Amino acid sequence: MTNTDILLEDLEDVLDDATSIPLSKKCAVDVEKIKTIIEDIRLNTPQETKQAKAIVDSRNTILEEAKKEAADIIEQAKAEARDLVARDEITKTAQAEAADILANANEQGKQFIADAQAQASDILNNATTQANEMVTSAQNKSREMLTAVNNYADDTLLSIDDALYKALTDVRRIRDGISNVQRKGK
Image (cartoon, rainbow, N blue to C red; front, side, top):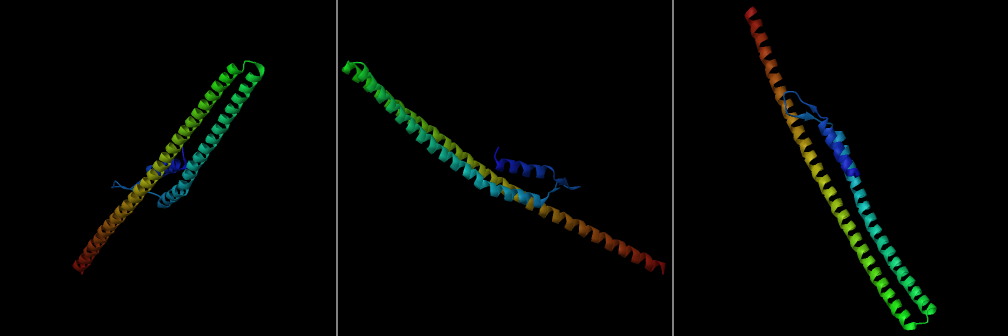
């Protein structure tokens, strides 16, 4: 699991732990905690990019190792062919066997390099796709959460405004009632 995934789970936890506002479908969240997590997501995004670069570097190492191994196989095949010619005095047979060994070694070396290149390319493509998906997902979740926080703040301020208006209306009504009682009492 990547750091970005962990941070997104932390963000979901903050939203899950939000305090419910009575008589409302709204919840109170710790805005500072959400902003901190979003900032951590932004800071961790380059880490995912570094991981993709490490995969590319790994691909290059695999290719170099494959080329070296192919060269070693070819060199070993040449040495074996020379030994056959030197040991057996039947030169034509030895040369034919050496040519076959060399051809097989070349073919195996080429196949090994092709397989390593294909594998490295697949790893790089998968890593790039995964990194892009994680960045897109993090950005989308960040936008969604920011929108949710803004909507919540707007709704909360509207509720507070309504409550203050009702309270002020009640205070005025009570004050008028007291004034009326005082006037009648005189």
